[in-house]
Image 1 (tube, one colour):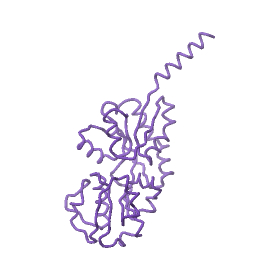
Image 2 (cartoon, helix red, strand yellow):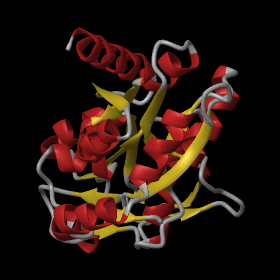
Image 3 (tube, helix red, strand yellow):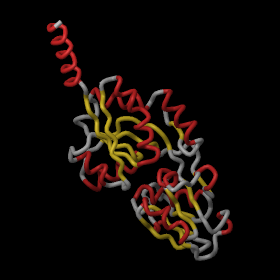
Image 4 (cartoon, helix red, strand yellow):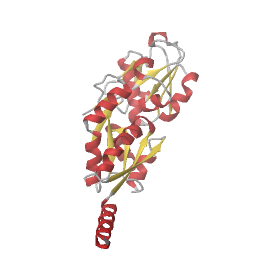
Amino acid sequence: MKKLIAALATVAAFSAQAAETLTVAATAVPHAELLEFVKPQLAEQGVELNVKVFTDYVQPNIQVAEKRLDANFFQHQPYLDEFNKGKGTDLVSVAGVHIEPFGAYSSKVKSLDELPSGATVVIPNDATNGGRALLLLAKAGVITLKDGAGITATPKDIAENPKNIKVRELEAATLPRVLTQVDLALINTNYALEAKLNPTQDALVIEGSDSPYVNILVARPDNKDSDAMQKLAAALHSEEVRQFIQEKYKGAVVPAF
C-alpha cells in the first residue's frame, strides 16, 4: 500500500510539473470570451490558460514583447505590422481566428444620408483603425480619399468632403462613450459589443464578412511554436469555437477559418 501511495504521488508530481501555463492578454469581447470558452479543452491537454483582460491596444503588445505575458489576442495583422514598425518590436501572428466587421454608429441620425453639414465624426486614433474607418466612410460615399490612400489613411488624405464633416481622432476604447456627443462614431466591434451595441442591427454601415482584417493570436518568435501555444491555436480553430462564434455573436463576429 505504501508503495502504491508513493507511486501515485510520483505520478501526481510529474503531472503537475508537466502542466504548461499560458498567460494571454485580451480585450473583453469577444477575445476573452473565446479564450474562456477553450480553457477547459486546454486543461484536458495539460495547458493552464490564464486570461488577462485589457482595455487598450498598446499594453498587450508591450507586455508580450517584454515577456511579462506569453501572448495576446485583440488585434488584426495591419495593426500588428504598424505596431512592430513604430515600436521596434518583432511580434508575430500565430493564427487568424475571426473577423469583426467594423461599423459606423449614431444616436442622432438613422442613416448616413441624414448626416448634417459640418457633422462631427470620430474615428480611432491609431493608424490602421483610423485608416480603416476612413476607407469605410469612402466606400459609403461620405468622403472621397486621395488616390493611393489605404489602411494608414489619415484625415489629411480626404480629397472630397461634400458634407464638410469634421473628423476627430480619439482612442478607440473611448468612442462608445462619446457616441451621444457626436453625429457619427466609427467603432471597433469589440468595443461596440462591450457597449451593448448590436453591429448587425445598430451600425448605419458595416464592413462585409469578407473584411481582410482578421483578428489574430500573437506571440513572440521565441515562443510561437511552443507546444502550449500550438495547442491554443488549434483550440481556437476548432469546430466548437466556430459554432460558438456563430451562435453567440450572430454575424457581429465571423469565423476566419
